[in-house]
Amino acid sequence: MIPQKDRILGLTIVDKLARLQSTKACRICDLTEATMNGMDLSGVDLRYANLNHADLSGANLSGANLRGTNLSGANLIPVNLTRANLSGANLSEVNLSEVNLSGANLSGANLSGANL
Image 1 (cartoon, rainbow, N blue to C red):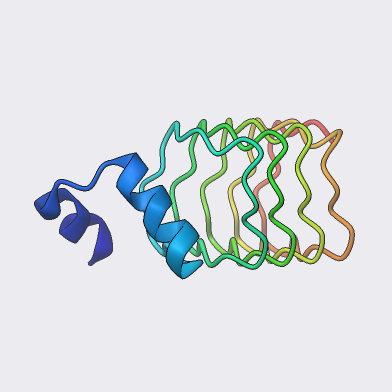
Image 2: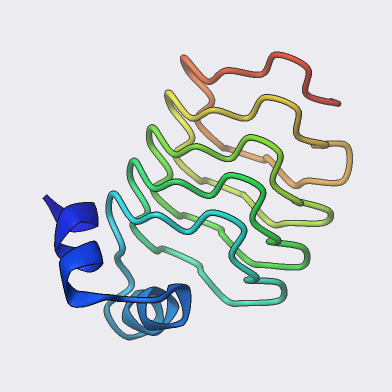
């Protein structure tokens, strides 16, 4: 499993972000409280990643696969999530008021406490 492998290898958030930028994928990654503001993350695969309280302000996540991703408490102001797959994602306690969700898939997403 990827998180256990990352712990064994001693990978830091910086290492994981470098992997994300080079491979466009970081499935099941623990990126809790990561700073990713302004990053171009269009089309990335972050399925089932933990982005709890991550700073994604100004990031481009258009077309990203965020299925099952934990985004609770993340800073998403403003973020481009056009055509992103957010099915089953946890968006609880997230301010979505300035987020572009055009064409995004939110089926089964947890929006409890989210500001729409």
